[in-house]
Image 1: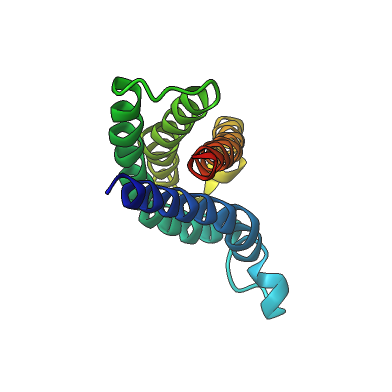
Image 2: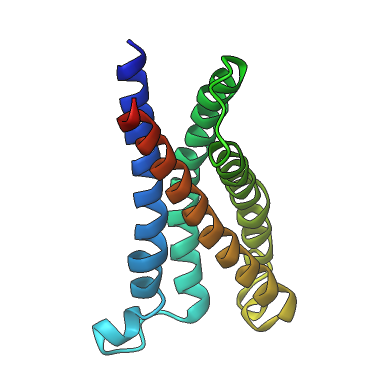
Length: 157
């Protein structure tokens, strides 16, 4: 039974990593350059941001679910003295980055977007957006480390 739980956990981590990489590497660049693909000025930068925010709001459901799974699995592993030098910091970093992104950055961006199109040029909004991008990159790295280390430990025995 433990083996099946480990396999399910690895799959969920892989889905989370895939989600983060897909949104960051494929979806965001396409959404923010949609006018280049269409060949006409269809959407403003603000409208592109609204589309991307809607996508991130949907993704946040899975990220929060993944955070809960990480808390349960790694908490149980820690309590069972199944501790590892890389798993604990990477799981902690993943949790911190997930909760910062879903509970802070996304909410702040949504509230600032509600102020209207002029917010795009606001330095505070630009700094917040850049910080959320850094957070998302750190999330990808921590999920990669956690998935890789857990996969190694499962294959090792």
